[in-house]
Image (cartoon, rainbow, N blue to C red; front, side):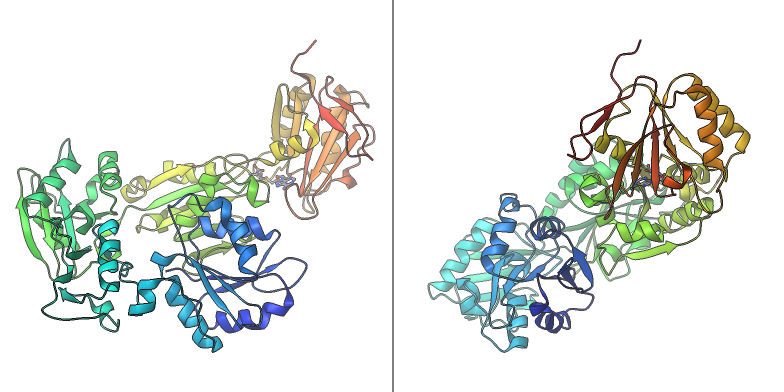
Length: 567
Ligand code: SAH
């Protein structure tokens, strides 16, 4: 389980929050911005709680249970993830587990209540009686059938005893009514449940399926192999394949279908190797080879306990190049959020890595002030080709004056096969020009171009030439990197070139820190604009001859737009 977010609204809760924090390594206290300072600050309670919940982060909120329920209500219909959610009284006098019964909420309630020396408000009947949730086996174990599980627990609650068949170390301390001659049994086994209703079947994920030369239906062949040994599909811990086939989409699809991680190992160079060789190469624990069918290309390994898939061979490395959008979390595309959440390593310029947070303590951050983009791109491939899941962050869109192009250049100029096998994805983001334009209205409503005024990576002469052509063509222009301390004169020069072709009345929009705290939007005419109005955190949009402004700036109802037509 990941570390909980301990959420507070005011200074009154900080002391209790810090005590709870000490219970959970890597947990952080999240505090309402402007009210109290802690480890992570948030702006709006509801949105923040829903974001944490959607990410599966356990939540300990020091506020009224009602507030918490109301904030999370919109997220509850989706039964997908349900992390533990607890309300704790600010003064530590009450601990109320609310959600996440199958994710260990009652265990957390007990831990926190013990710390605060109060009784936890536990309401789960099975839990009250047995001191554990029988239906919540630890990671690596799967309940065969939740409906059957519930009937089984009702029988126990009605006074029956149970036997335990198989290895269930987590039940050792449970106050279960046990008897070796009981009618009911908790059975921990990789074998498929036969439908008997006097058994609670829990499958350890203890089977690995290795596939080699499988053409066609990988999933069918694996299922058949499992079936021929009476093994439950839920017992499968991972799908294992030869490293040479890392980039094969059929394997990724098969693993997704089987709902298990896909891992890789070197089977040896020869063609038609028995799939059992893969098991030998990848498994570091004792196991029994149940199946080793070279013609079907499937082998099965059975271990005596659940296997952690992270210890089997290695994963296909992943590099996802994402854009954070201009700044605020709600302008980041959901796919980028998902990539960040799934990343083991996060790379990028320090400021952006901070914007990408809150990150989990188990995520490695390679923040850097290093402006050498190619070096950073190579570093990303090095990490990913070790099997890690890397997110490379840029602001705005990663393909607009940002990291995506450097990543591709690094890949093209490398002959490293491991780099080529990395699963590379580039996700779009909301670029500063789009974010600024939307706030101003629609200045990019007709043909436009994006130009970086930085002459760090291109000669100034080419910038001048492009400016002239764009200005002459009456394109709306969005200037990125307009000015900096190291480049103080270029903007004035650029504006003078534009003024040769555009009237002084031409509309100009300046967006500074758009989507970030303290962001401002201002409108000017080209005649009024001074380079001192602009800094490196500013987006400059220079309108075309058609760009118009109407409304009243003071009343907030001012809009700038470029019509869809041209004459
Ligand atoms: N990939 C980024 C651009 C990086 S270049 C994107 O797509 O937005 C950096 C320049 O982008 C800055 O000099 C500034 O001109 C502009 N910029 C980036 N974020 C901005 C923001 N939040 N508000 C205004 N301009 C921004």
